[in-house]
Amino acid sequence: MVALFVISGLFALLCYCYDPKYPPLKWMTLLLACASSAGLSRAIIESFIPILNTHHMNFNWLNTFLYYARIITGFFSIYFCPWGVLMHAIVYSERFPNKIINNLKYILFTPIIVMIFTTTYVPDIVPDFKGLFYWGVPYIITGYIIHLYSYFTESDPYKKKIRFITFTIMHPIMLSALILNYIVRVFDNHHEYWRYVIVFMLISFSYFIWRAFKQDGVGSMNGIKIKYEKQTQIKANKAILTGVSLMNHAIKNQIFRIVTGMKLIKENTSELNHLSAEGINMVDSGSDHLLKMVEKINSKTQDITIVKKRNNLTEVVDGVISELEVEFVENHIVITKEYLDEDVYAFFDKTPTKEVFWNMFKNAIEAIEKEGIINVRINKKGKKAVVIISDNGIGITKENLEYVKSPFFTTKKLKDGNTGWGLYYCYDVMVKSDGNLEISSQVNVGTDIKLTFSTKK
Image (cartoon, rainbow, N blue to C red):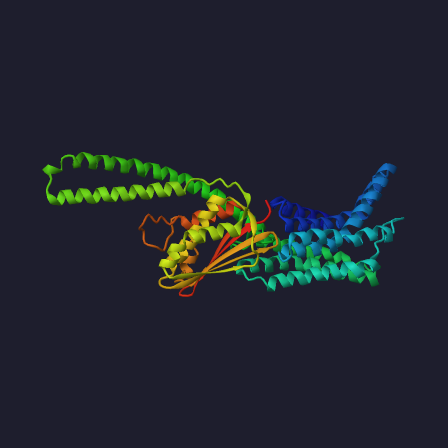
């Protein structure tokens, strides 16, 4: 049982340290704390007390302390687990509004209060397993159903894979706890089958570690890998920005030298023939174009500081659509809207986010070769607001889709100051806004851009 205490405790600490404010991880930490408490509760009477007795350290004050520690950890581990399983499933599913989640948190806690009065504490804690059977078992089964429902109804392939991995990590622990700790003990509390839960805990822990270090770009559990990748993205972005800034500075200096030289030569054009004058004009035009590109890259590669405020997401999207209305008409593009709520509020920085939407719509316009449709969907899922912009343009090949969010990568011709920085800039804004930008596309079918925002600061 010491092993259960240590492994579960390390597991809980690992989850908590990744992101203490992420709700699903908070509930997962509670579940692992329950498992750790169960191990500690048994270790007190099976390991700690016998060792103390062997060394003649059975002091009254220490025995009293260990007795109450055994009662508290035993109560916490057995009764809080079903509540934690169900609440984790509800929060992680992203299918419930915040108000309902907050109410359910307290309503579902009620049976635990009742258990205070139905549990035996002397001479040792004996949980009310018959009472648990009527609420604890339904809690865990309902949590199971919610996990399965949220998996099968998830439309985003990336998130669906993450949900599958999360469920497969939790599955051995949930199932073993349900059967061995909450069902079997109602009918047979003499044979200690519940001890086998540690085997399933080890299986899950091993699988978790393997997924955490697996290099396939998919999160191991509840967004842990996503958070790691987000921090990596920010660090990589800073390195890129520093390099680009130095490069811009060096190129800009050389362009200014070329421009200055051209001005000196132009002052004496009377001594040059027609071809020489034409060549000078070409160099001059090219230098001017290059200078504009460097200025544009420089403006885009400044490190962005995001100051999030609560803004009306619907209003910002509609504002950008209105500003681009002339371009939509000129390109014979129809805009369709599917807003599940009239106004959706989220936390983001209005100015860079507006530029993100501007880029998304401009890309959609360029992708539609003749007449086409751009569909805009806005909805709210739990603590996330989602904007999906879909077009029926030429699409992106599978090979290019992998690199479209990389800096300087572009499928367009390098004209009109195009630098291949647009999508990378948009992705950077979304990551720093605690959101996400996802792209799915099919050649000659169209492209879907999914922008996710947080509705909590």
